Length: 143
Image (cartoon, rainbow, N blue to C red; front, side, top):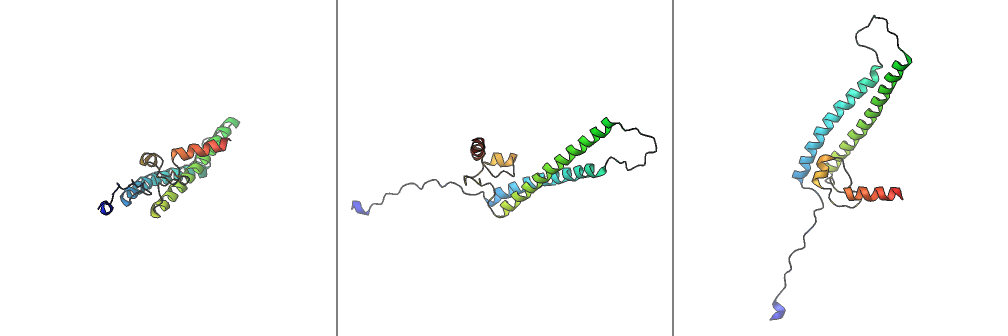
């Protein structure tokens, strides 16, 4: 009779391998909001860069530009260009995150395969690494 008794062990806790469709929808909304803001900022920076220091209204008053003025103007144009490049890369990263949402791979660490915590994704929605994986890669880079 003992042979007829089956021991049922509790099912092992299964680690989640992806976020649910509802969770992905939440992240998609966050990303779309950030994407809209980033695109506006990028377009503003592009206008600053393309403006070339000319005024829309014709200014007839004589102006004397010193080397310092030109240097300061050039620096601000270079800064705007660098900011625009960073913003463009940010936009690309957000768009890639939207693709991962569509593929249902969003939020999965590309090194460990574990889920990136929601808190991290809410702060850095384009993250592809857990903090641990990022630190591990940073340590490898130093060696």
